[in-house]
Length: 193
Image (tube, rainbow, N blue to C red; front, top):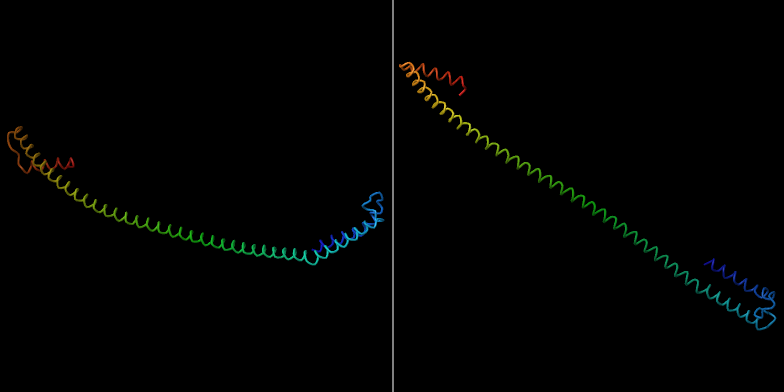
């Protein structure tokens, strides 16, 4: 505002000096101040200029200054609101990230618990299957041992009978059953049957 007043006062000084400058330019009828019409026009020019200057200084420039102040206040208010909104948005983003992180951690914990439960269940099932297999294996081994004992018993009887028949054919006399059983038993024991 003060710089505008300085400019206007500088223009007023130029307006006052204008007639002196104009008289130096002789040959131009518009600037011939010897003519009363030119002097009257210059006077009215100064009066109108002064009236405009006073009107602008007293009414126009304060209006402009008020508008500029209102605009600056509105801009400042809008900036404050924008900064507040940004702070609210940053807080909301931080809350959202924290909630997401907490949900992610909770989901990971649930997944880990479910995996651990599944492992425990699988281990229990595996242990039960192992126990059942051991029972079946023991039963199968018992059946095999029983079958082996039967087979060895049957083999012993067949071997004794065959040895008896061979000895009878070769020697013509039957050997003592105790000797025959002992001989067959030692051969079977030697073969690991």
